[in-house]
Image (cartoon, rainbow, N blue to C red):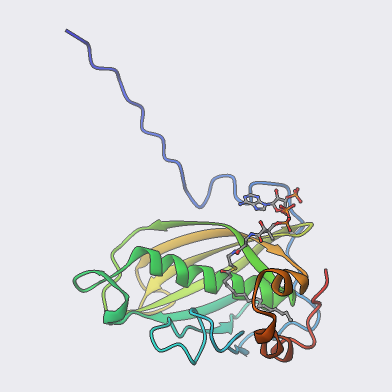
Length: 200
Ligand SMILES: CCCCCCCC/C=C\CCCCCCCC(=O)SCCNC(=O)CCNC(=O)[C@H](O)C(C)(C)COP(=O)(O)OP(=O)(O)OC[C@H]1O[C@@H](n2cnc3c(N)ncnc32)[C@H](O)[C@@H]1OP(=O)(O)O
């Protein structure tokens, strides 16, 4: 008869441990970054996260927080976003954090960024009809790597903690979108970000 092997439980992910995972420079928002309290517009009208021309999109809205390195984004969960009856789909919640964290990195540093790595902890179910308030902050910068993290609370910035996430965004030049995306659609993106540092 085989004896039971003891199994040690390893918690693979917590916000507090080893974050950022490398040595970073303290985050300094761009001198022309929007001031605390400023609403941040849609970065692209067809964006699934913030676009105003995507019917089933998340239609998120973001505002620079009380502190200059923080952004508060909202995502209202509708029945189009369900995974189980009455509850938000986890993948879409991760998408909301991708948008909120990317917006934080891009708008505060005023450079184009893309997601390199994104990790999510789901702490509480998020019901249809609730609004997730996602407070994101710049944690540090190491070369082209920008580390950001966020917490999502139910129905208020100080509501119950439901979701946490942290991510690495990588700054890219405009050639990233020319080479890999649809150059015909770049005009709108260029016009919306004409005064950004687009070639880091
Ligand atoms: C015309 C005007 C333009 C204005 C535009 C404004 C835009 C709006 C801006 C702001 C709002 C944003 C809101 C959006 C929110 C949603 C964002 C998304 O969903 S983005 C789509 C999903 N993500 C991708 O499709 C990326 C796919 N991956 C890649 O293209 C490449 O892998 C990339 C660019 C991430 C890196 O490739 P490499 O060749 O440029 O550079 P390498 O050397 O590989 O990485 C740079 C550093 O990052 C680390 N790194 C990269 N990926 C990593 C990972 N997964 N884990 C750990 N480290 C990683 C590497 O180890 C390296 O570090 P070491 O400098 O050597 O220390």
